[in-house]
Amino acid sequence: MTLPVIGLDELTAIATPDVIFTAVREALIAHADGRTSVPPPMVLEFPDHSGDCHVKAGHVTGTPYFAVKIASTFASVNNGLILVVDATTGAPAAVLADEGMLTAWRTAAAGALITHAMTPPDVDEISVLGTGEQALLQVTWLRKLRPINRVHVWGRRPEAADRLCQAFQDEGITARPDALEAGAPCVITTTAARSPLPLEAFRNAVHITGVGTDMPGKHELPVELFEHALILTDDHAQCLHHGDFGNAVRAGTTDPTADLSVGAVLRDGTSNPHLRSIADLTGVGATDAAVASAVLASRLPSPTGREIDFRP
Amino acid sequence: MTLPVIGLDELTAIATPDVIFTAVREALIAHADGRTSVPPPMVLEFPDHSGDCHVKAGHVTGTPYFAVKIASTFASVNNGLILVVDATTGAPAAVLADEGMLTAWRTAAAGALITHAMTPPDVDEISVLGTGEQALLQVTWLRKLRPINRVHVWGRRPEAADRLCQAFQDEGITARPDALEAGAPCVITTTAARSPLPLEAFRNAVHITGVGTDMPGKHELPVELFEHALILTDDHAQCLHHGDFGNAVRAGTTDPTADLSVGAVLRDGTSNPHLRSIADLTGVGATDAAVASAVLASRLPSPTGREIDFRP
Image (cartoon, rainbow over all chains, first blue to last red; front, side, top):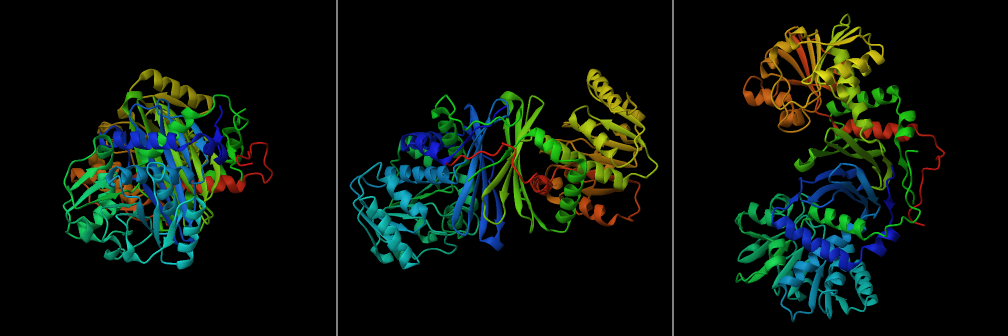
């Protein structure tokens, strides 16, 4: 019996944006259709080390593998891996030792897909709130789907905003640190905020994608934004539990059945009239399963010396 | 960066009964003291393949590792592994590719510890209901703690009961298939029952340990047994959610605060007067963490060729 451990170099070669976009899109649509199995995630907290660990699991019904993902963030450093398990026998099939990269990519892909779908085609100007890994990735992955010509960056720490602008420049994207009120028509929030960002940051927004609310206690988007907005959730129950959709519902400004699913909109689009749209993304275990399956399926059939036999 | 994958042969050499008993006992006591972090487990079901997968996570506060365990049962075959993660950095430390064996052992150890603690010292006669792996292990691990001279075996399928009796004989234990009413003073239930076993099976019981209720829908012990019994749970919330303690509470025969914790009894014993005692064991993620940590700590410092470098 062998358990392949697939490391970051090989994953980077296999998991092209096409592979990730296709897998994430199909998983979100399957999730909207009820063709997935996604138990509520687990969270462990390690306050002494500024750490937390999220465990997510998921399966797209009828597909050959399910996935269990361990994603940790300690002192702002991401780590983790994905275990892929045969959905017909329960036998472990592979460890994707991705150090958190596939999670970063599937989060970027999910955000880019729905941001692109909901933002008017002529908009090429983006505001990004937050200066971490997702601040960079949400924009660079969106640029794989449409031209992006100007990026406004806002972060609590000016030096972090400067660093992120430099990273955008290195990718050939014009970016500059901006005050919150310089908001673009499309706003992406990627912070770890535990109280809402200022309302003025969204005053020009026609579409907002939020990816920061990954556990209870997080809160990025002011609840007022949800009034008269078209609300999209990647997972209704999860967003109600710890997304900004749930924060707005608990504040009494939003009806708990007001949301549409991201997957349904990716599949069919939407003709609902609306002032603005908000996509609340909390991360769905089914996308991990789909990405992991796609990676295994794309892998070269002949192992490259990384297979180990641990039961001689 | 390397991720050691420790296979079954090495685990069998390291994880001696002493190591397992000590780790499980300390984890159950820590859990009773509130010195653990154990999120609610996840369950995925695969009805087309008679399969389910349980994901448990746990940490004993202040210890160097936490564990995430994947345990699957497909068509009655157990499989799985335990991922051990550094609790100070979030970095994966090792994969224990135990194929479900450490779970079997920690379940056996937890059962044996509390069965031994609660059964009068002169009792050497055990009834076992169920004929699977735990039916064998609960008794063989208990025999590491006290003499066992007679085992009564009951199972739905006579041929399975005969096979189990043979397995006991191979271990030097006198065992025979018996009718349910031949119950011993100590009864251990290890079935996958979804409706209660007959009450007469417990008519001589002074202590009962149940290990079969690992998910909602399972039900081994008749609710009448819980009246006037001393009730011990390995995890109060989990046993209330899907253990037989919860079944008795929902039937209205038992108060939801009637239980003591297994860990407190292992630490201090109990002087509560009682007609009989019942230990409801649903399996605690902290014991997985403790066993995994103990295994890593006991491991020979020099790797034996199983280390692989997956990021050259």
